[in-house]
Length: 267
Image 1 (cartoon, helix red, strand yellow):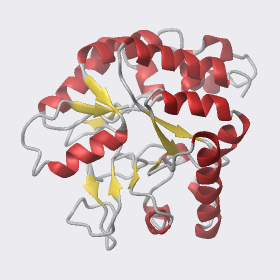
Image 2: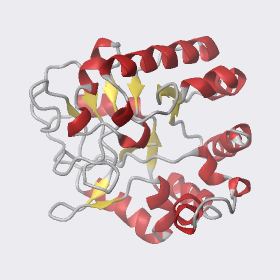
Image 3: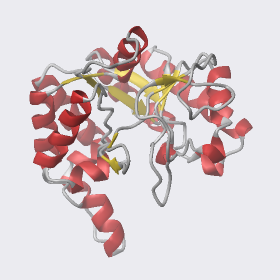
Image 4: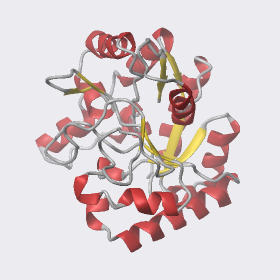
């Protein structure tokens, strides 16, 4: 938390240089602690989404506790910036088949979209076989991408490949992959009519967060490539048309089958 303001300002500066707006999924506790920062994000035209109140993965919550998390986060964001978040992203991408009850809670809590599904299996999270493109959530099976009528849209984080899926997504994967290969992955998605829905944490752009305290493995996952992520984001924003997740949701709803390339991607 000590580097929150510095890290967010770094990201805001990069986005301003490219005249790009993005979605900031905000932890409610941080909105309560740094309301001025959240107001600056909103005043610069960025979308505010909910990232829960305490950054607790859904694996550790009951439906009632999750509902309370959403209520607290919404209140904190409204108090800070005067806007209600329409979208949600789960900490640790913890909307999976085991926590699919989250879609009902999100809908009942007046959210209109979720962006938490990671459409491949990882050791910590993921839904193998889930759709790779935005879709309307079905109450019967929220991971089919069929004609859902639940009133909630899902905008999954991006992976590449069909028969064998590989993570693109952003975050650690963005720091791990060479810049050339990462940009090629985004281009390949667009060429196939799939938008790239990417995520990054503000602290990943701030080398001063580095510490020797974690284990070697934890240090690698947390800090590998942290010095170069700003260059990657600069390159992405120079080559592709990015915008907030809500814009991606709107354009996806307006399209039909998506058989033509959709160059609009989300950050």
